[in-house]
Image (tube, rainbow, N blue to C red; front, side, top):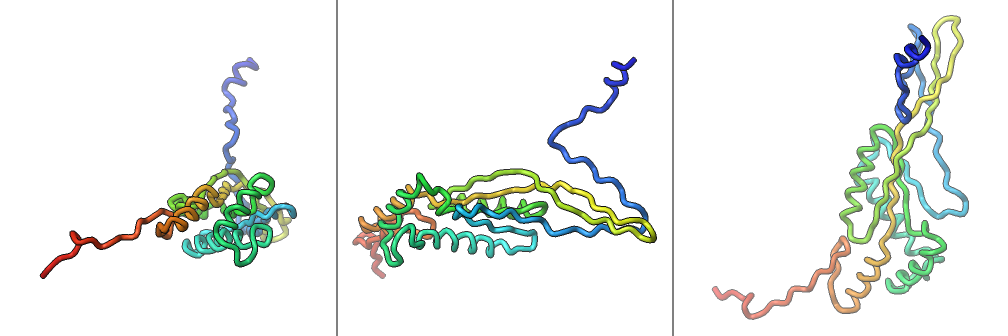
Length: 205
């Protein structure tokens, strides 16, 4: 008999979210701000928190600015160092400090779609590498009851997405070599040969 009842019991699927219980009539839910994870003091990786209302290009420009600023740090190279010096410093620090030239974007809920769009943007850039990590975070909601009932708090689970963007040191070194050999470099790090007008290109009218 016990085995029959156990077989009829629904199987719990791990990794899924259970539905929140209904609140009493007249009560309202107040959502607390999410607790932001702070990076370790020894880490130089930067965290940008993205919401559904954050403009797309604002996120792109902020991430790009922090990536570019990581090449100008005193640990990487002097202030007016050449691109070659910065690339060499970046390669020296690649083993002991891998986060020195990386930025992390984090978002939950409806902001996940925007972070995926940012990942696609930087994936098309010639000097960047992207890594995506999924997870869950806990959010606390306050249930404010009406009348003489006591207020309650409940924990809610949210899907979270982290995007890690870092500079590709191999591509940066190639950009330096292109500049040395007189190859014009495009906005996204791709080499572009300068166009030379020849006699066959001229048109007589």
